[in-house]
Length: 600
View 1: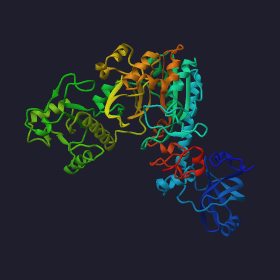
View 2 (view 1 turned 90 degrees about the horizontal axis):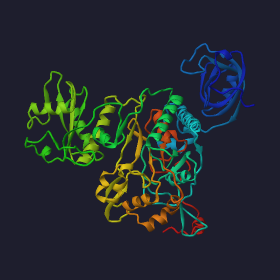
View 3 (view 1 turned 30 degrees about the vertical axis):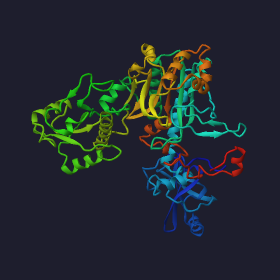
View 4 (view 1 turned 180 degrees about the vertical axis):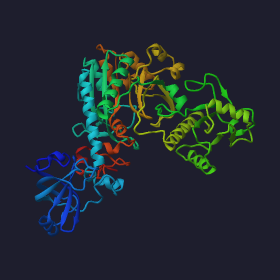
């Protein structure tokens, strides 16, 4: 056999045991006439001790980094123990060794803290995957996978596979298109999710379905997106929203307990979409810290604006405030001593194109109770006290203020809040605060069509199969009520990241047609694109709903990271390329001819 033990399992109780190890050379150290070699596999590192005779052999035929070797010897106690290694109390006194395969000099060090840049490590991903960091990440991913499957099985869910070659449908992100050789001029699409298939499984009577499945979206990339990604896809029949929230809150608790050894003592808090937007400026709030948004000026409006008009900034003849549609503030605790340089740096931060503000104002709540602001010329201390009370600012705090159009300014303040949370150390990667966000708007009006269709139209906030709240179904017949209709939908948010979302689905043909009509999809187009689903609804479709969890994102958050790339064995880069295998790439012209495709 190649080995009797792996490189991470031997301990002091194994002393005097004869063993054979196999693995990769991590490093070689020579001390006079003796030498030490660290050998590594995915389980750990063990130190090998080479006596004078074997060291002479090493001198004649040196072992390079990443050589694959086999070594036999006796476990002995180390005189110079290494507490950083699980095997640090022992070493192997080698009697013989063999080089199983040589290695070229690796392009970067295969160590915890490597000297390789990201693009280089992506090109040599098979080497990067040898590093302990990546090995821990993929081990965590496996444990999450196993934990999820155990829970789903215990709750009576079937793991059922759905097709990868499906029909392209409107809505959502762009599809990846696959030409069909046998059906000239026709194309498959790779699924963005198994949405319609899992609904069909509910019609078929499989009332608890799940799948850990690959999905595909041809969209611009960022840290938490990949063109192919994995999600935990689930659907249940004969359920209401409460049933699904309880089921998947239970799943989340189970995974955290098994993978992290953590328990949540309280029920996950719930927050409506409107509350989340008003208090935090986005629909996936990080509730690990406060610094909630407070409105100093806001119009009366629909959903997330004030019930009554708010204006705590008027009457000072200050054009910036007077002309602004929206004025919003946060109180950053303990920051009243910020210097002018620090405040100028924050102002430049919000003026970046990604944030889009023209400037920032502030009020310092000094420790002695006095107030000092960047707008002292226009507002007296009495007015500043009003703002401080509204923001619940304490002595020593710093109030940051942004003005502008409501939607953009709210979003900018949300980003500033998160940035201050980072700077002040409030976003602890080892602290987890989940919550449910519920009661989303069903529809939103897009001013311009992405498909070049001219005037704007109503689009689904989730997807076109999401049901309205039961008491608002009748509102679907009245376009004037579209802005007020709430979706029977929910998102699971963890530390400011949406890790899952779902809804109660439409299960009646007539309501589904009304939804398509609201989205500008006429009955003919609906039949062409979704005839199979509409037909199924004619044969006793049960009430049903589901949820999909972003599996890559969940694993990254459990690992204390925000970037999903290092939790995927072979990811794509920011341009959607696999630089290791050089894909996408050109194909043989013969293949294009067979598909009746020609490059321009």
